[in-house]
Amino acid sequence: MRLSHALPAGLLAVSLSACGGRAADSTLLRESFDSGDTYSRTVPGSPATACEAARRTLLSQGYAIARYGSDAVEANKNFQPRDDEHEQLVLRISCAPRGDEALVFISAVQDRYALKKSPTSASVGVGALGSVSLPFGSNDDSLVKVASSTVQDADFYRRFFARLQQYLPAAAAGTPPPPTPAEVPSDAIPATPPAPPAPAAVPTPPEPVPEATPTTDVPAPQA
Image (cartoon, rainbow, N blue to C red; front, top):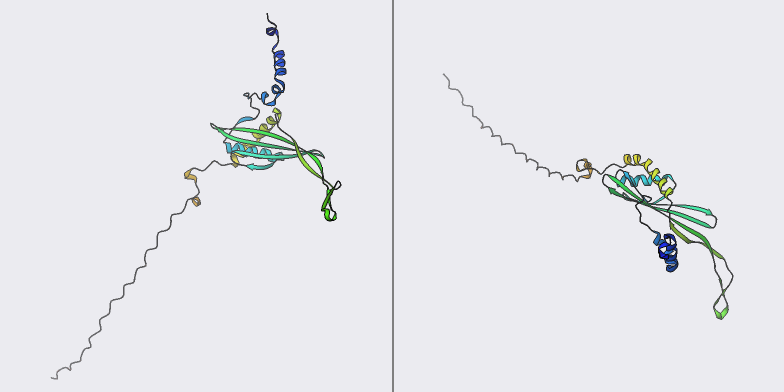
């Protein structure tokens, strides 16, 4: 039997990675695209209801809502683990229809910043030579991004979806379905312009009264 057939699969993988160098250790090659539900769950209700429940979930945990719509929510939260470090957690949620239910996707990105000092030099005018920069001055402190990674902790997303389920009933009650044509409020329908008023009736002038003919008194005959 050949030796290569007797080698365990693990040793073969090690030998292949040694031949391929660092390419085999790349993070991209470890993406499996499996069928797990770490980053998505199906919840009852419409996408608008699911995103409203997600917005309430984030607000209850101190997140600042950066963008909100009927199909997407984005929020962030800041942390200060040490005086010279700053962290920000950005959550992006998308809601899509799935039959009579909604499919909720979530992705959390953790950004880390460090306080860096950048020395600034002072300029001094020296006659005809113009200005000369001297190696003394002040230090300007600024935050510089030093790392950014997607959160892959399954427990983190599990806690989010568990909290989301608690807000679904309230979100469904506070998010009415889109009105049907019969339910559209009357003020949203353009009113029919009123008909022009009928012309006023012209009064008929009264008929002239004929003048009375004067009568002459005839004396009665004497007997």
